[in-house]
Image 1 (spheres, rainbow, N blue to C red):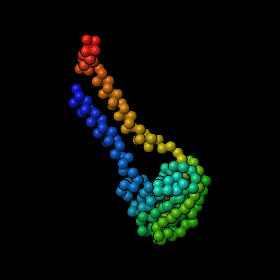
Image 2: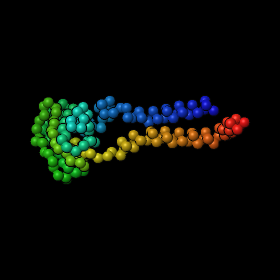
Image 3: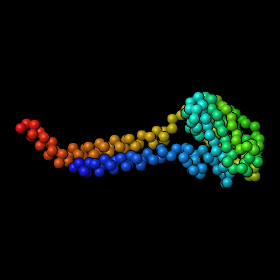
Image 4: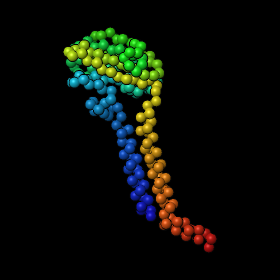
Length: 194
């Protein structure tokens, strides 16, 4: 009986470990093609990094920004060809391009490949629109969520412990209902009364 319970316990641990492997490879460990902060149109790629030094000096974010307030937005023009065409950046409050324009960074050629701006973002949704006036013209969109709960992350963080708890309860139930356990408990009671 102990051997069977230890096998089931090992299986639970393996299952929980498998559920958490996705959390191990966070933003910094991804390949460029899999990075959610990367946008690609054809061979043209850009990357967005968002910083909030007042929240976390070393942390950088992409589309889920933890707090409202002072925010540094850095756009890296990964593709060298984008460094030779005029690039424009707009930051819009709302969930579409028809919202209020918060910042409109002048269209310019960024030979160093880096566009950065510092803005004060309010809680809610924002859209960052990056346009390249090349042939053909390109438009990249980032939908930013400022100080909003990401329910997908909450679900991923809680599913492992919930599954582990449910499996432990199931194993406990099966154990308490087994004939061997009932016989063992009855023999213990008999020893105490004797």
